[in-house]
Image (cartoon, rainbow, N blue to C red; front, top):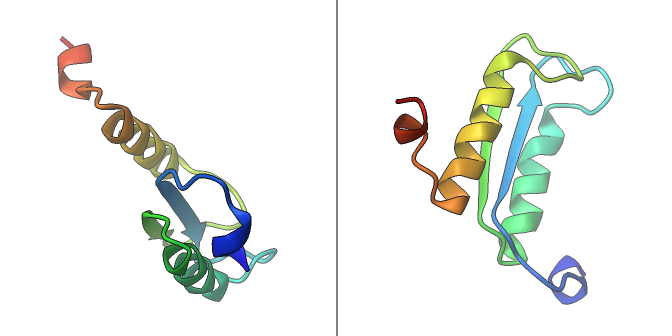
Length: 79
């Protein structure tokens, strides 16, 4: 149903903690499979010991993902 319902397919980053007590970590693979089957490029990471939250590494992954998608050279920005 998702493939027919969505109007655009931007790349997606999913970051999930393996200690999440709200959304089980097993849901990550289902989300990846569903999005990919709808033609969405998905990057995903599992964070060891992380609950239903974001950590510094997840935020870093998000920044790097957005920089890549928008063609921003982060190393050039830090100079």
